[in-house]
Image 1 (cartoon, rainbow, N blue to C red):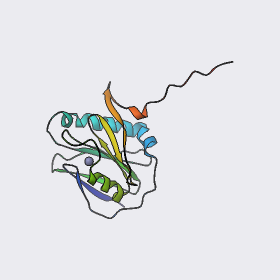
Image 2: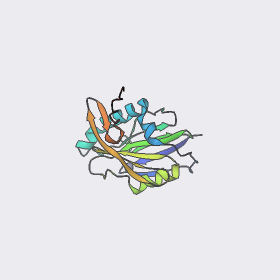
Image 3: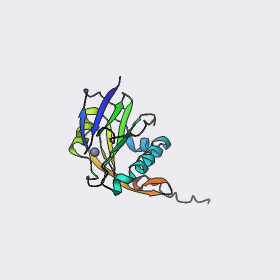
Image 4: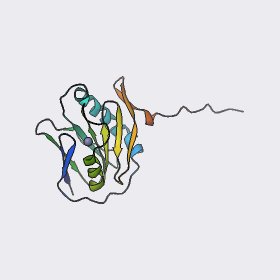
Amino acid sequence: MLRRLLLLKLTSYLILSPALAAAPVQTAPILRTPTVHRQVTALYIRALVTFMTDDGTEYAFTFDVNGQVSDIQSSYEHDRTVVTISTSTVGVVHTHPRGCSPRPSEQDITVARDAGIDNYVLSEYALWVAHLDGRVEKVGNVTLKRGDLLINAFRRRKVAPTGRA
Ligand SMILES: [Zn+2]
């Protein structure tokens, strides 16, 4: 059962079909899975020009509970991005170009709640999320380093050396 979300330019959305119930899923571990992390990095690189110019394009991809990611969609051609989500989709990550707030918009929050998925917003310096339960939080600051997107909240803590007494 597939639904389509139209991600309209300027961060407004139109939902074409009613929401499906989705089981709450811990999203941070999902984002840490290699496939999703690689796609978040690819999304950031794809959107770089929109962070630095007035290009205005938004990009997005979805991921499911198993860490499977969709292709990156863009709003370039028709002023909108169509993202297909299924019952296993647990999240969407979309970009906010320069000039947009890095925080989820009211429409982003509505999409998360109505579609029952976590709606991540990636901008030049930060990753935010509107959770499906309505909570909005900053995941962390982001930096592209050696071709990899570092999300500071996800940095592994240094493990203290274990004593060998
Ligand atoms: Zn947005």
